[in-house]
Length: 96
Image 1: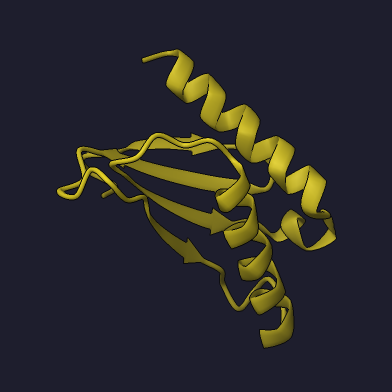
Image 2: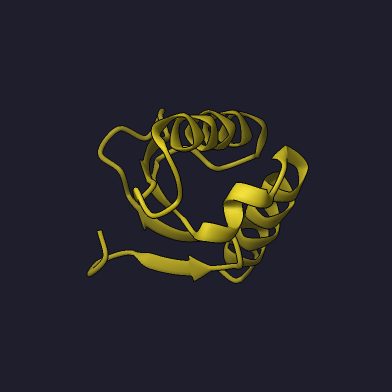
């Protein structure tokens, strides 16, 4: 994915996007949350927030997206994370 995809970076996330998924009716998502970010309950909370944000953000079907959390995400709330992700994805899809 790193070799063939696109990379977006913001203060909370690193986003890897790969277009042309085999099944064009789904969005495949993966999450990378390091142990450096916190204990298991913090990482799970961040993962749940990221899943919910992806459900509510308009993303075209047929892509694979991999979100890697940065340390600053621990102090961010749901709305901050959603804003950052929407801003990054809208700039990416507008440029295509």
